Image (cartoon, rainbow, N blue to C red; front, side):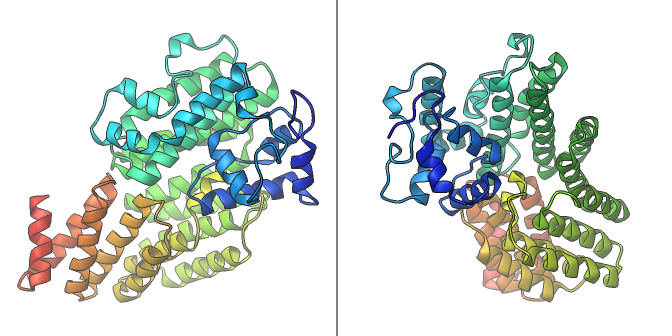
Length: 433
């Protein structure tokens, strides 16, 4: 039966059963990952559905719900027919319909370096892309727009890499903080804006980080940390410290990496997410490896595996959708590489590449580049050349300075082995590229 405006969606409530809204939201996010979708589902969203505030979900949620409950229609799930939804909901539906086929358009626009207007449109930021047209006080639509910007930037980065996205993501970030300065109509909206603006700063900071703009990344991460502390948001603070630890490792400041990871762990203790604690332990392990402290590194790796083994939880942050067994293997690989054990690092990098969901194209390229570099340094040049060629295939759709830099380092390592036909072919292809 259809759910009318403000009428509770009893059908959907029955489907949740005895699970809490947070537990059910975690199932929705997991189902989304299973089919390559990215949705921002939390207990608040489930509550809005059950209260009848969401009469018809957008197309991404529709695909997820129909995957979760095969053989049922949206009407069976308690939603109104799409054609019956008017006004603001209809606008959201039209926006979602454009989303459904946007992948190729996004790739062409960003890979071709299209205009800022096209870029903003593909990011779905036209709602508040012009800071001169911001409302006097931010409401729920503006908070939702900031959250949507975060999701879209992350999705594009997963598929295509950071290089062409970074400059185009600066405007929505400025707009998000302008909304914060304007104030919100209610405290709950202001809390959402603080969280959304902070996550957006981290997403833009990551784009800077991955494209080699380390000073910009440091500035964005610091902005996110300040936002977290002003609003008392422990989850955002833990995320900011995680990124800061990663950046410190990448820029040759391992002791700072250890301190940032430990600070993140303190912020995350009360959040109930074992996966977040596992990631922070891996960040700390990377710092200890950079300091050549093998024992401390192994202790942190042991904690990371123990926390990871405790499984997923409803409290796991949405931004951690990338963190599965493949990422754990990759981060452990980097630790062994920093300690000079390249054959051991290669084993973990190979597992990371094999385990990674192909949807995360950038990560597949990254893990394979790590594998190529480890194999080259471990004395397996032919295998390294094969892996390097695989990375070059992936770079047709991914633009990442990080991956390019790793591939260049691998090529330099392989130069002494260029008498091998496979190595020579890889080096020639790399030189042409």
